[in-house]
Image (cartoon, rainbow, N blue to C red):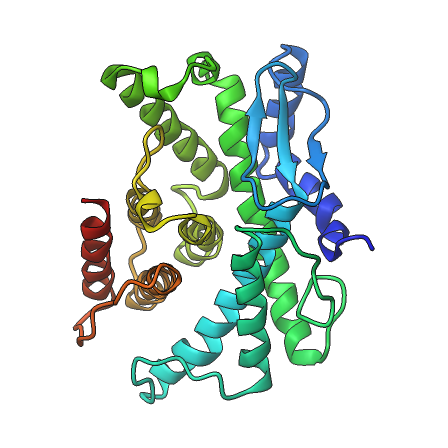
Amino acid sequence: MESPIKVLWGNIVHAFENADESALDMHIQATKSGKLAKSIAYDNCKKKVRTPFADLNTKEINIQETYLCHLWSFIYSVFVMYEEGVHKQLINNTFDGALQFDTPLLKRAKSLFDWSVLLTNEYSDWVEDLPNPRTHKNEREKFYSEKVNSIFQNAVTFLMFHEFAHLTQNHESFFLGIDVGKLSQAELCERIQMENEADQFAFSMLVKETDGEKQKWVNGLSVLFVMCSALLITPRATSVKQLTHPDLDNRLLNILLKMDLKTDEAQFYCWYLCTFAVRFYLLKHHIESPAREYDTAQEAFFSYLDELEKVKN
């Protein structure tokens, strides 16, 4: 059976080609110069998750269907759990720090979350009875699915522009194909710098300095979900520390800072969402998380980052 994620493929391509008024011309110029293939390589082989990558030989951006399934299901489940189980409870001053799966909506979101994490270890088909972008069990799940579709499409756009940058921004040495264990410290630093440049380029295609607060919040949220997902993909706890990429916790923090949110509401929502995601990473790897009260969402987030530093060191 065809994966439910396929219904969004046309939307994904359209979002990538029309991210802003300059995007389509940028694509045309890149293909004319031979830096970018006219097609996107879509891998629908039934394998465990592999993140998007650029191929210097074919000039194609490669997107794996399993990864798209993971990302959509991760965004949906975390968004619903956060909105229904945390954010609303915080607004009502009834959140005690523990997520309660006390409604069918939350229980089904948690089941989808468990499957999204399972995909990082082994492939399995999407059980279409769970929430998905193609069919909806009720109006509430449809409401959340439609919101998630928009977040997801922007998230994939960010990932694709990250790879677009590698192909078009003079990152040829990124594709040397050398055993990374043989790279010098300077060469490793160069690769990390190229990853930072690709992140910055992709971020700038989605979030503009001239955007209003709400637009920065909405578009930046898509990038945050990419970074939070990256934490959950880690096969081992220590994988948060990277050799040729910025450490995953640093990438997440950098995006939070780049968003440059001003209002207390926007800051709290995004900083605490990321805290929530880090807690899931710690749970996946059976690491005890700090149990204490915090004055601000930023304080909570940095406390959890301290736990990640312990893992790395």
